[in-house]
Length: 168
Image 1 (cartoon, rainbow, N blue to C red):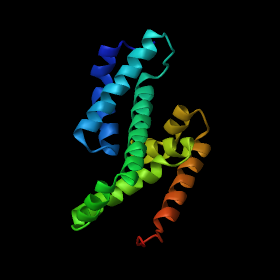
Image 2: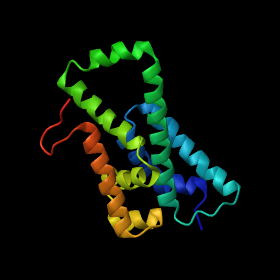
Image 3: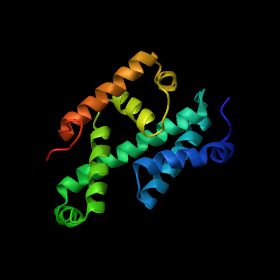
C-alpha cells in the first residue's frame, strides 16, 4: 500500500527533487514540477488508484513532467523571436556552450519514443540497473537494454557524434 502524501514527501521528496534537478536546472520550474508530481500522487490516492511502487511511480511521474516541460519550453523558444537573440548571446562562453549542449541533449531525449525516453532517463539520469528499469517499464532486462541502446544511437546520430567529437 502506498504511503499517504505527507509520508511520501518525507520518504521520497529529496529523490524526486534530485530527478527533476538533473533534467530541469531552473529553480522555479523544478519547484513547479515537484509540486505537480506530489499533487498528482495525492490525486491518485484520492481517486484510490493503485500505486504498487510509490518510489518508482513518483520518479517516473517527475521525470515525465520534466520532459513535458522541456518539450513545451523548446516549442515556445522556437516561436519566440526574443529567445533567438538570447540564445546567440549565451553561446559566447564555453560554460554557456556546454549548457546549450546539455539542453540540446535534454530536447533530444524528450523527443524519443516513450519507452526509449524512460529507459534512457532511468539509466543515465537515475543510474538504475537494467533489471530495475525492466521492472519499472514492465519488460525484460534485455528489452530495457535495447531501448537504452536505441535511444543512445538516435541521440548520437542527431548530434553527429563519431565517438570522439561532436560535429556541427
